[in-house]
Length: 549
Image 1 (spheres, rainbow, N blue to C red):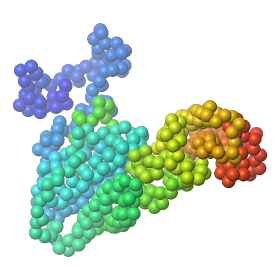
Image 2 (image 1 turned 135 degrees about the vertical axis):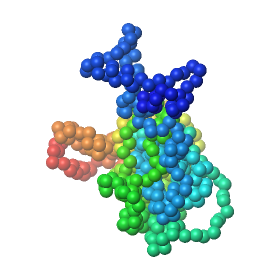
Image 3 (image 1 turned 90 degrees about the horizontal axis):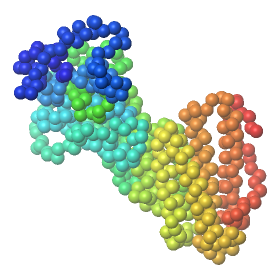
Image 4 (image 1 turned 180 degrees about the vertical axis):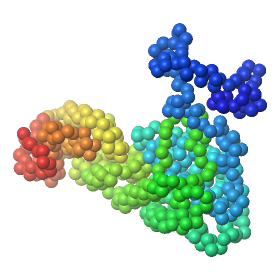
């Protein structure tokens, strides 16, 4: 039953859904009210064939938490527009028009930040009726241009997150629901320059407030496009746009005092939770406009971030992107792993981590230009003369390269997902170690040593075996450390966890020392034994509850 039928007369002319030859709408409110009065708590009206299975799969109506239609003010976007939700022009008074335009910009910024946090695009950014009907804003040049860049920015973010496949926290993030993301390419000729509004005393303040918001949008879109350039070619230019974005955000914050002092109408009650700089509620927004095109799941209660929190989010996002752009794209895996681990300590959000993954892995290569085999050769401390050796076509070496790619992608996910995946790929690294070792024994025998040096393939495989063993312990160490970051261990478990860390770090130090010794030509390594004396420093255990067994 439609929600309008519960509150409108039975006449078909007054209903938003017209009656047809096969349907007749009638008001059932009196019947439901009588039934509710007669029912006691726990009672249910049902037919004989209504069982537990049907109850579990039934749609619960009239409950805002389960019935997406009950919270709808409008059945369609067109109905909302006809009701005056998104007028064009916004106001006949130019001063009010500019004030409302700035409010719309600010609220869209808060909606975008909320969307980045994992909420639905349809219920956040595209809760703006102006974005849903692009053709309506063509007569308002400023509003039309801003809506175009918003749609283009959303499409760029969805593309980067989808390509990186890092949207594991929230599957709704990349769902576009058929929303108009692609902006029109038509360009109108420039019109004569005219003032924004009629009050010249306020012209400078409003111009500054508008320009800083428009400049931020322009530079932020350029940041997204520059960072997608292959092989990191746009990172330097992206840093310049990032600096401009941060500067414009500062100007946007400063404009709040001017906008609040000249705000039109009544302001929002909660100053801290306001979604605009002026404190006035933006027009043209309704979170229920797209509820009918959302996924067939219970409606979500979304709390839009405040304007100040949205500014803080974008400042942090830009700071994280700037750290990525400043990375020198070092081909050393050891340096790269340290950088990623340090970068993750800042708890970057989804968009930043998606850009990091696409920067590291492009077309199956590191930074899009360094093959995985050359990365492994350098990590195993082998001479660069082996970079083009035919052993890179070996089945197990190819699989090892894919494992390195998967590891880099996993390290770009959130901490919880990362720890879970690292625990799974540990087995894959042990399996590839055994496979390479068995292939080495089959082809070169068990007694071959590195010092013989006659067979280049044998030397490469032996170095790779040591490196794979070392990398397995590094993954184990990362797995244990993430448990502390996620606060998974209770105080009673510290003794056991630190003992595991002690063993893993000792073994990791042994493998690293062995790799360096072998690469210097001062040691021998056989596939069957590793008799090795290690005089190492005991790792520092920083905790009050430390007990080493």
